[in-house]
Figure (spheres, one colour):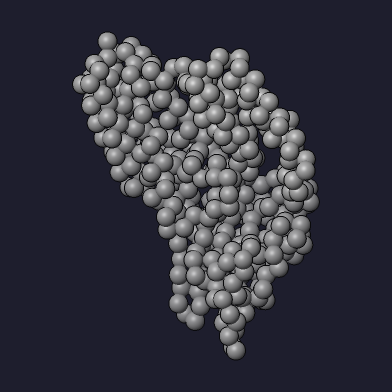
Length: 364
């Protein structure tokens, strides 16, 4: 799913550019098809790259979307009052669908496989943990010995609204790739949870419905937990991660000093499902979420202003109501304050741009 969406987006500008350059629809689609076939054929000779028919289809589809956008850009940017009304309503519906889908994908989802087990790190593309794990528990049970999908108690513990994975480690140092401290995967190598490290950071992830949809699963990180070099007397560190009452949580305690970070799992995290590279939520995550919601809400207000006062009030109320109701309806964390500020910013930005363009070219 993630690859398909990114492939479509990648070729949209290609289609827009060719169509605006004056080429016919058929010629643009033909060029898009030939280009993506050529790229896929070249990948046969590139180590580590795979050739896929689905890439050909999605890239060509992206070219087609680009052609469509090139032909309707005037309607999108300078719509009449009636067109603006339809665009505002459509984007408001998209806002509701995106928030709802984002919230639904943020629930714990354990695979239906019959057995779980610990895999060699190489099988999960992990490095060997450089320290020593003294003990580890998941949901209060020792891992890996007591973790079995055949146990209803285990499934209940790992799918409750409060799941904690904890470990005590000694002598851990910085690694360049991901190394697992405590992890469980099924026989298909689907990761159930993972408490580990990347470089000097502690990271934690727990399988959610996002994995079922083949998009990125949220991962949280705590920076500067592991040092570059191991001292003469290695430190003992108690590390933990979990999902507690719809909040991702991670912590590390060394010599009595405890550091931790939490992040609400809510309807605003949709942007993180489609990042095409490895990413863990850090202190910047709330700002990125706010930026996402600002950009997502602004177009609706742009068109609502051009559609008239009634449409403006209706769209603004719908955006705010959905941001409040969807988390309650989908049982995720309530909308935090920075997302409300982002909505206000998006409303103001969209309305301001809409007013300025309406004065320059009043909608009919």
